[in-house]
Length: 433
Image 1 (cartoon, rainbow, N blue to C red):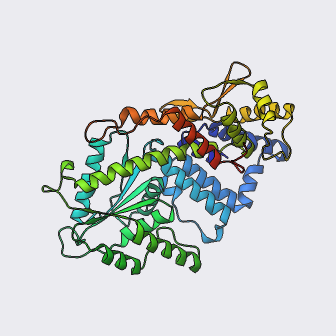
Image 2: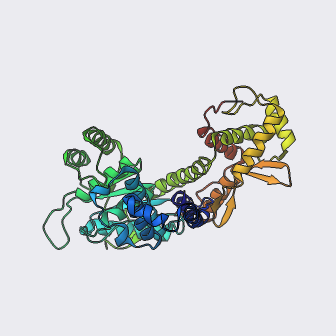
Image 3: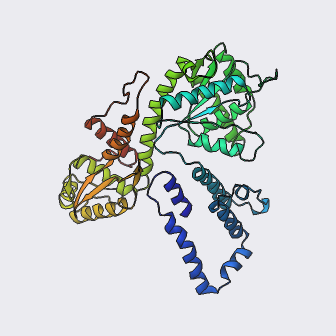
């Protein structure tokens, strides 16, 4: 629970990780009281998994990468320890390189020692810095491929990204050499992105035969960033990757005259960035809300959907009136086969509020909840406020190349429609009313 709440904190969701951290000491003290002062030491010495987890937890808390990535003895390998250690490593990167949760992220896959690829990557990064300040992040990895952190950093950033641009030069020749590079890393990164369900766009240099390129890469063996579990999964992933390569977006580009200026970035790539930014922004906002709602029980989520129909924002209703409305509409949540009685409806509202009040979503330094309590017994649904906070943040900053705001403010009806769709996605029986 400590690690899960650390993840919540990274995502901007209300977290109790400090409380769980304090509980470590409290639990150990209680065990010492019951079983003697040396109980914890004896437990760690007799159970290798506990000793190993203690070492990795200390490395995680101290941000010691060398210790966190030290080679583990094969004899200690057990699934639950392996998964916990891997979770710590992933959280380590999240804490070391925190990214604003509301900003879309674009990962640029490129050959870091091929001049054409590096040039286009820099042009894309410069364009994003100039045209999308505080509204989109360009992610990429450069450095020695044999560095112990190299693969982990790539995996982490692709996992964090909303979309992946793969730069495909016409002739990937190594800088200062006639040696032609294979598409090895591009394939690794593109396959991993497809495996994670990310949107992938291949930026193909003008003159490249796209069909020939697709045919070549789908026949080339892949050194997976994350190895598949057995032959069946490998075949499934290779088939999925080949299908995505054939049907994914392919954008053509031509390098500008001086090969450095963002203003020389090919207009086709500029237009593709605009389209992808809009797609990423809408997807990220919806994912944030769905992720936030998923922290609540199914009964709470279904009650929120019921309130959406009965007390549409910005309407406020007392607990008594809301309970009467639920009963009148014969509301049944996932825990009741029969419509709720008046007392059951009031109890359900109280239970839902107790759950919701403990979980907030932070947007631009301000906390939001799915429902608000006004006074002692008056409630209102607040998912529309979360949507408006996300949208208004984008609206204040979003400017297209012509200088006009491209993000059009949604009408209240559109926000209600989106609110309903998101709530339905989290419910078992969405068409209750």
